[in-house]
Length: 104
Image (cartoon, one colour):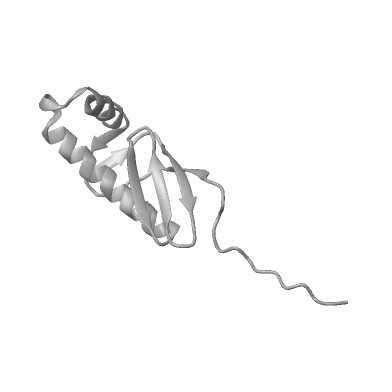
């Protein structure tokens, strides 16, 4: 009888859901978790926040969540600065983001 060699796949083939409950930023906090869809392959991990239409990228889950959190904080301050000049789609995103966050 021969021994069958198996290899462990180091990444997930199917997307999965996560939530973030903190932005890890001392200026901004969230009241409601932000839902994410995470996909991994052999090269990178991608997290997508569909309610905000924003992505985070990285080589592992920790890195991708850090990137996404930073992008959300940057988005908050960009939209807040320009909130009087936003188009329809960005107004929807700003309305949602401002309803689940507040400045500390």
